[in-house]
Image (tube, rainbow, N blue to C red; front, side, top):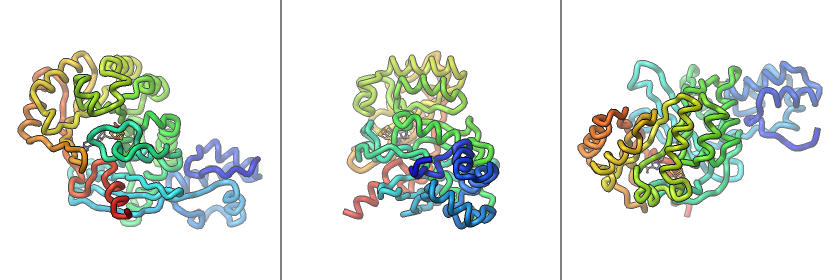
Amino acid sequence: MNNMVIDLRGCSEDELIRICQEIGLKRFRAIQLFQWVQQKAVRTWDEMNNIGKGDRQALRSHLHLYPLERVREQRSEDGTRKYLFRLEDGETIECVLMDYARTSSRDRHTVCVSTQVGCAVGCAFCATGLEGFRRNLTVAEIVGQVLDITHFVRQEDPEFQVTNIVFMGMGEPLLNYDQVLQAILLLNHGQGLNIGMRRMTISTSGVVPRIIQLAKDNPQVGLAVSLHAAQDKVRNDLIPMNRRYPLAQLMEACQEYTQITHRRITFEVALTAENAKREEAQALARLLRGQLGHVNLIPVNPVAGTGMERPDPELMRRFAQVLEDAGISVSSREERGVDIDAACGQLRRQWEGELK
Ligand code: SAH
Ligand code: SF4
């Protein structure tokens, strides 16, 4: 075995079994280790009290455990919590826990996970996009967000379990494809947090080849497509990715995705004072004809420097009505964490601004 140190939180059970074998430890140690990290969400080696000190020492020389540093935590009146985490190299990312317990009888705890530091796509309305791309997150850093939130919330509520994951934080998940897919396997693992594949959703701005690849590689995980506009001339300005993969190609990929997976895609549409118009709604209804999907309307979260404004709620209702009349399933997303700047990238920006 070489001396390369491996990130413990990014390791599969099989990798841990292999490492334990190589350093002369029993197989059950690997299973214990995996459970401490992925299920009990501990942040230090010292907490792993059923693994003897000597074995822990041997493992430490091969495996690196780096918990994320909680730089900030904001709590919204509606139960949403937003975390700013610092990574080992000093970069910061955001992560949000949407706590539905207060509004629904079924306990649902959704974590919105970041997949990159910054984002290269550069959407016109997005705080993360304004910052440009810094780097991809590792598997350990992606899973680590869910583990650390679990750890922190369990300090107040020992029974706490994350039930759903949305890859809707900072970054474009399909441009960090391999890491995101591996993170999903870890989050789904029966000896880990055991989050059902169907309770995890990847959101993409429209990386066409990867949408088709995802259908083949993991047909169970959910897909959300950030559509936002139904005409190329409008979408080009909002999502620069549209110039590379225009709407016709994107919709073709969506058709292929549903043919392979038989799953309904969620189409995200952020409405602004500018685009919440009847003509746009009609174009959207035409675009989605024959596509198995559901439209989620969101009022845009105004980000300083983008010039985007929230639409009148009445305009949103009329927009939804046009879609419903065309037989399209539509919901208007209840806004969460508005009082704590919950749009992705906003907290990091604010924090970096304070440092300057
Ligand atoms: N990069 C992926 C996932 C992260 S963004 C994507 O773009 O889909 C998650 C969602 O938040 C996307 O639907 C994105 O369009 C939306 N979003 C970003 N900034 C927003 C804002 N200011 N207001 C409303 N939605 C926003
Ligand atoms: Fe990137 Fe998504 Fe933000 Fe667009 S909306 S810049 S794809 S994170």
